[in-house]
Image (cartoon, rainbow, N blue to C red; front, side, top):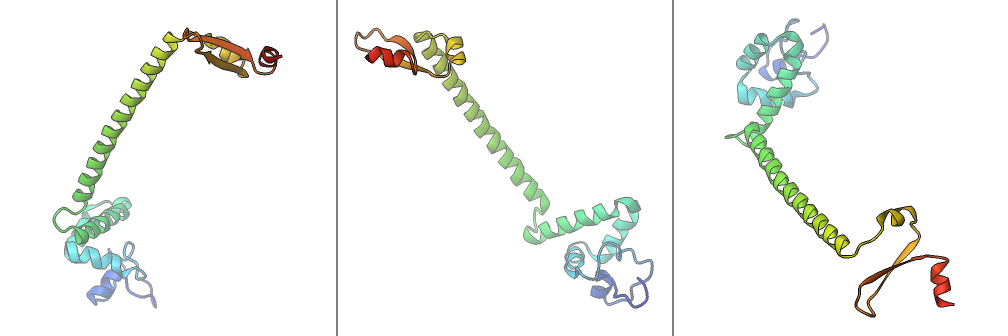
Length: 161
């Protein structure tokens, strides 16, 4: 902390003088006092200080972020904390995997039905793929389920003239 600066959130909450080498200052700025208050309530200032000293300097910001997340989770769910959230999300993933399996099974069933239908009514798919303007007209007049393919503009018009 420099001269004329306000103390970090932890020193402000603990009502102590913020030293120049305060371990909390880089991670708990004075603008966000709630961040330290939550961590302090769950872990205690002494334990947070010990944890930060054991973590390499380049990983301390991530450690503080994890502590804040766990402390917030513990405030909402004192028994399970973030483990409750993880368990909930794992159950959600399992439920969605079951739904996905059911949807894939339904797609497979529909594909099999479509294949059965295409073998019942043989068509020339290459001709249909090449000429997208074809009309398919099924004539059931003689119950033979015969398939007639007409060119949309030419054959269909000549059929009625």
